[in-house]
Amino acid sequence: MVRLKMLRRLNCLLLLAVMWSVFPSAFGVAPGAATYAHPRLYFNAAEQEKLRGRRNGGSSSIIWKNIAESADWCVAKEHRARWVGVIHPDPKSENLYDRFYALAGDLAITEHLSFAYALSGDETYGTNARLWVLGLCHEWMREADGPTESGKAYNIARLLRTIAVGYDLTYDRLSRGERQEIRDLVQKVTTQYFADWYQTEAATKPEFHGHYAVVEWGSLGVVALTFLGEIPEAQDWLKATITKFEDHLLPLGLEKDGAALEGGSYWASTMQYRIFFMAALRHVTEKDLFLKYGDFMNCDLALAGIACEKNPGLDQNSSSVVLQPSFAQLNYYAPVMVYLAQEYGRAVCQQVGWWDHSMGQLEKTHYVTANGYQMLFALGGYAYVWNNPSLRARGNEARLSFLFPSVDEAYVRSSWQSGDIVAGVGKGELVVNAGGQVVLMEQGLHPEPAKGNHVQKIDDDGTLAKLESGEETNRLTLELNRPERTLRISRRVASEWQWSCQGKPTRDKNEIQWDARTKLRVVEGEITQYNPEGYTPIITVASGKIKLADPEPVKYPLVTVKPGTNGVATVEVQMFGRR
Image (cartoon, rainbow, N blue to C red; front, side, top):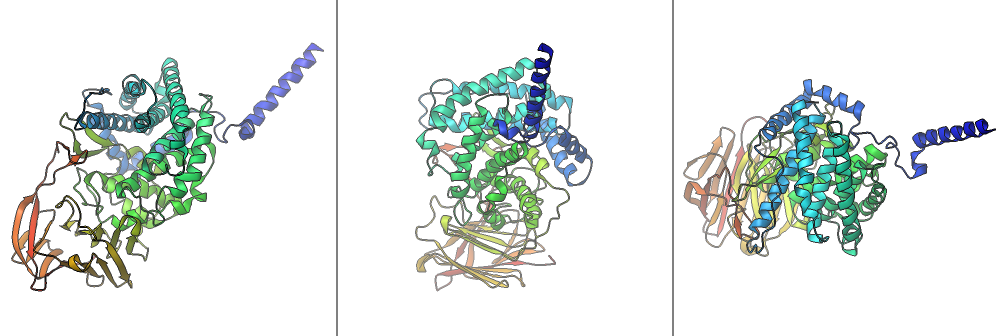
């Protein structure tokens, strides 16, 4: 009788085990995560082997080469993660930016090395990635000391997400004790912030839906997915994150025209953090937000402004994405574009994404504090995983002009070929990229754009495009003739018109030429001053209070044009040769 009862009990347990594996959601566990193996976020062990095999050929081998180059740089760093303490008072916010860039740098290196190890199995990368993950726990988790503060939630969220990703990717390098240490720390801090921040009205209200919201909630979601089955509270964290994404972050996070109110660089980072969470959510639980909310994953702003190929090295403002700062050029956009290409089948996204020849590298920036802390970004591992080598890159979309009323920006482009003419107007200021460089840029020369200088309209019949901006006293008109590859720009000014350009052009009277295929000519008015090194961009933060220590300062040509007798200056940008 006893033996029969034991057999029945054993059969019940076996049945429960089968149901757990086949129908995990019946137990409140997400489908696909029943075994809770690592890695799990973006690939499992079987998929990991396939990803490693791609390193030896095709487009993935190019990305891998860049990943390895940056990983070697990370390994050679003299120190690992180091916390930068708070200094009071901090009247110019110098300590604030030291701490922000120091954390950003340490997070980027940790994430980059973790992916480098996971995608290769390289012992050196694995050893160093493990030490950086543990270093974040031992050093930067001091950020969570003391009471919960909404002002600290942004950094805490990014820190927890990177630790979670590192834990997932380096799981086999961590000892049992180290895994438990990380779980205990993540559980303690996340539970605290979930109760004292994420559950507050400020964090859950519909109005909290922009860039900062998606970074904080997206990070929480990645943490939850990493520790499902290991930290009991992770289910609650995940449920709350999904609700926030579905109710606010996806339907409200971008404007109806697809722009981000904070600016184009915020569009890119918003999409990064959306995909960080949503891709992991689908891989771990099979819950797909991409299909249901595809209308809110608009990439028109990126397609409007991406102008040309990007080579490795530090970027300049608008050098490959017009109207955007140096840290938000094509390498900041490309991983998002290749993901959207394979997710929604938009071949043009794959084409412009692959103009980035640095794809896979750790992104270094001009943004360095006086104490040497540099803002870094790590998107290389994601680019490798998200790239679909079999997807054809093709610029086959008819739309070539874009208007974004929500942020007062407009763009016209001559084609989907790299280096063709792309012009953007933002809050009345013009940037033109042609031949693979900026040939005219008003941005940066004035502290504030002129008031009332808004984009009025775009008329485009596919052959000719006309963009009008400003009022009668400061009217700006662009006329793009696509067959002739010519952009005619007229600007009404009170006295003189001044702008900068990039590269090393030559000037001959009223003509400026970069190479055999790119020329600018003043057709109304005249160039009165041309200084080949007349403009040096100064990088400042904290509302101009802090001047950063640019590691590679540059000097641009500065051009001054006197308008014609009617107060209008007109220039013509011309492209030559075959596309």
